[in-house]
Amino acid sequence: MRIGELAKATGTKAETIRYYEREGILPAADRRDSNYRDYSDNHLAALTFVRRARQLGFSMAQVRELLALSNHEDNPCQDVDRLVQLQLTEVERKIADLNALRDELGQMLRSCQADKIGECQIIGSLGRQSVM
Amino acid sequence: MRIGELAKATGTKAETIRYYEREGILPAADRRDSNYRDYSDNHLAALTFVRRARQLGFSMAQVRELLALSNHEDNPCQDVDRLVQLQLTEVERKIADLNALRDELGQMLRSCQADKIGECQIIGSLGRQSVM
DNA sequence: CTTGACCTTGTAGTTGCTACAAGGTGCATA
DNA sequence: TATGCACCTTGTAGCAACTACAAGGTCAAG
Image (cartoon, rainbow over the protein chains, first blue to last red):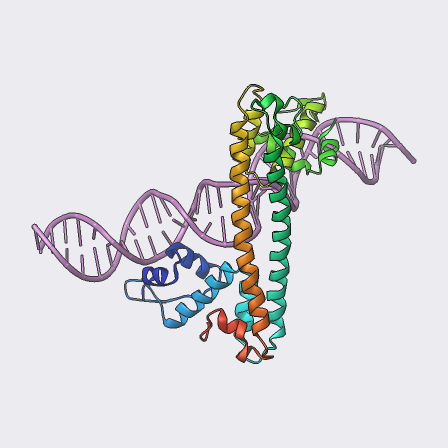
């Protein structure tokens, strides 16, 4: 299949696929006489894997690790578990941060009853003091 | 105060302060004979404002808006409220996304009882099929 | 007078794409 | 046969918001 078909099949832009190839995240495709890239089902599977991992928030570096691990059938699962656990922890940290943020923003909205900036609690709470 | 002091006072790197000046987020500092930047309390207030807004997740463009709004005491508060509300909505969307992510990652961890990659449910669920 | 901490400018790197530009290929239609 | 259009190629530059140098100037202490 050509790059456009692979792109459609995986919901990835062709440019992104070429980028992955440059970065060594995906193996290079075969080339036709026209020099067009020609992809196999293996490529489809690999790209699906990569996209899924990226959607789950793994960095490119982590995706590389996952790919490397997945290529050795007899590697211990532990290494994969560790990466997933790491990512889970990271996601939980972000959720906590965002919850705190949400509370602060909500608080700000509730606190401001003024209608002119001059008395605005929001601006005030951001630390203003004749800015500029 | 010199840039290093301002940096320490606000928990910002000196390089970031210079970056803000280049970007027009902060007004340029006065210069001493030595050509060192010389900051006033107004700068301290302005930078505090900017950092606080950034910590709350506002983009540079939004910070610019907030700064512009804060400079007109008789502007209606509504415009500020709108920005804060927008950011709150965005944060809530991110939280929802991350919650979904967390659930998926947790599910993956629980699902894998194997100890070899060959039978690993995690790798399997990422869409592997002889990758590479 | 030298050491070391601080400052200056300018430029390039980070992450993960995305968006051109300038040109080649392949196929259907006039 | 021509030609139009969608698709492909490479290479380069841009995005956000910093961060990290490099090469050199300034200043106070010992």
